[in-house]
Image (cartoon, rainbow, N blue to C red):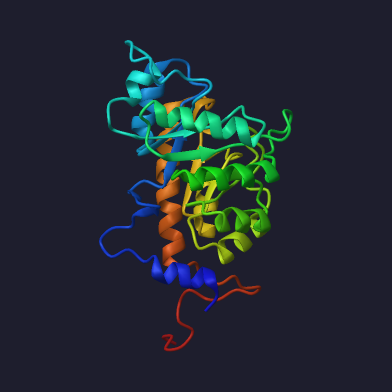
Length: 271
């Protein structure tokens, strides 16, 4: 039995199918962001439609201390969501660690998304700086979810550093290109002992379903929902896609065959 088959067997639901990250447990495997929506009302409606329990916010771009009417800070202070602060916009390990320490000072839980960008055009992460920052944050007691390249070696180093999950990209942030390299994701899944959450590049519901069918434990997205023609309907579609993709993975797909195989029995036919 290969690692993916083992994961499928051990993950079979027994009344619930919770995503466990560190000491946290979630029913929804869809993580969503709060950027790029028309206003706070649309943001709230999309979050509701998505069914997400974890909502990521950019500490350097959103003032969580602002609890005024119509603010994102007020929306997220309702207690309905687990806030996942992220270090978007940081280009060094030092910047990222300082930003996430600020999130802790604001009273946000210790569950954090680590981002250290290496290139402003592609927004690809800086592997070396990400690993360095992860080690520091783990030592300080943070539960770290790092955004990273879909590189099995980098994912292994981040796991060895103590990260509670790894978050390889499917494609560049905000590109909507979908999963460009499913083979790398399969390798990452085979070797990982922590949850694997696809982060960045998802464009539509079928992309989310594919990620889950591969065996990924969750999907994080923002632009795919916020920039859809109807963000609320797309949020609902993503919710259903993640759920159905997870069920398909647990069910186990039929083997692919080169030739046809009759659906009806070929023996006992009435002459």
